[in-house]
Length: 261
Image (tube, rainbow, N blue to C red; front, top):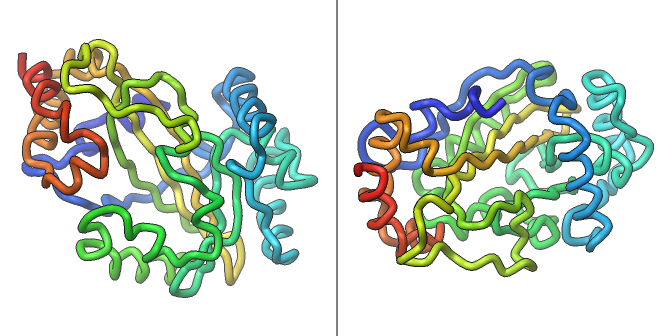
C-alpha cells in the first residue's frame, strides 16, 4: 500500500503549496482489511487506553445504519454491530461529515491522528476544523466545500497529505505530547508520515472520510533522487507559518540538507 502513495505526486513539483490533488479511487483497495492483525491490535490498544479520545458515536440512527451497510459491503470481516466494535475490527480510521455545507463533523473513530483530536472536532464545521492550518481555508476552502456537496454514493475520491515526525508510533494524539523534531535530530531517525485519504457518500446526507497512515524512513526517501529533491524543495519553500504549524520550523533546514546530500 505504501508504494501506492509514495510517489512524486505526493509533493509539489516546485514550491510548497496546498493542493487538493483529487483523483478517483478503487474502494476495495482502501477499505478492505489487508495489513494484518498487528494494525488491528494497535487500534484496540488505543481504544482500550482512552476510548473517548479516539471514538465519537454517530448519534443519527439512519446515518449509522448507512455506515454499517457501507462497511459490510466492502469488508465482511469487520464487526459493525457497534461503532466501538467497528473501530476495533476495521483497518481505516474514519470520520462522518454532513454532506451539506458547512459539513459538520458527526462522529467516527480515529486511532492514528496526526496531532489532532476527534473529540475536539465534533459538531464543528469543516471550515473550523481546518482553521488551525495557516492558509488552507484561503487556498482551498471553497473548492473543498464544493467537492463535498457534490459527491454521490458510488463515487470515491482520494488524495494524500504528508508531514514529518521523529516518533515511530502511528498514534500521535495530542495527549501523548510527542515532541517536535529537534533542530539537531538525526535525520536517519525521522519518518515521512503519509496520510492516504478517501472520501465517499454513504447516504444522501452523510459523507465518510477514510484515513490510512504510513511511516517511511526519510533515509528511504533519500534513496530516490526525485523524491528527495521534491521533499527538500517543499521544506525549503514552505511558508514560516505552515512550518511552525507542522512543527518543522526548527529542523527543516537540516533535513533539506540531508536529503540533498
